[in-house]
Image 1 (tube, rainbow, N blue to C red):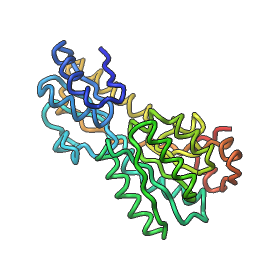
Image 2: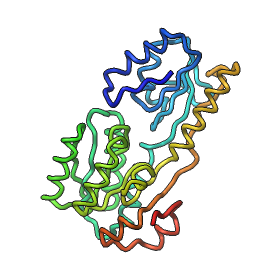
Image 3: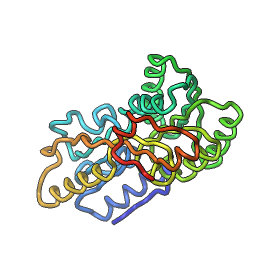
Amino acid sequence: EYRWAENHLDRLPELATDLVRRRVDVIAALGSPASASAPKATNTIPIVFTVPEDPVRLGLVTSLARPDGNLTGVNFFAVEVAAKRLEFLRQLVPAATRVAVLLNPDEAAIAAANLRDVEKTARAMGLKIQVLHASTSGEIDAAFELLAEERPDALFISSGPFFTDRRVQLAHLATRHAIPAIHGNRQYAEVGGLISYGASLADALRQAGVYVGRILKGAKPADLPVVQATKFELVINAQTARILHITLPHTLLSAADEVIE
């Protein structure tokens, strides 16, 4: 049984309740909004979550080693590597002094965590940051119009499901306006984004599937420790770099898991 809210997060509680009503054997909740909604619909049906931040801080479990209740899952560290993404962006644009940060205020927890880590790392690097917000496709267009006027040296795009869903728009706008941008996962680089760094979403979802299978065979969520991502990917789109007239540093090329030609 599949349910997809099509980025209308207010529909998630209704969709979770519908799955509970159908008496499914286990719920796989993918992403923070779905993972927050599912436990409100049931405290008996097992739930396997995948979230980009600390599930203890989110209140999903009280312990990673021994989750309580009916929840367990995967933490794929999209938020916690925000500082590392900024470091890679600085390597790519070493002369940068001002970096724009694009956040989605509708994904408040993700936006706050990204901003917190970026601000701390930017101060250490001597970078000034300019914060922009967008939570609709039209607001993304408006943000890039402002970027075209203000001309920051680079752009940091926050992690989160909404921006991932708009990755083609974001990648194309960054290239059109000649703004070097770093993204949170390889899906951006695959559609023309310049560079991405983050945990492997495919690996996180595979592990969630493994846990769903184990629960269907009789395992209890409380006996399955929360899995933390161990596979991270640095992906560079060399064609986009050439369009932007950016010379890729050897240090980045040697560190990259994949260079898309």
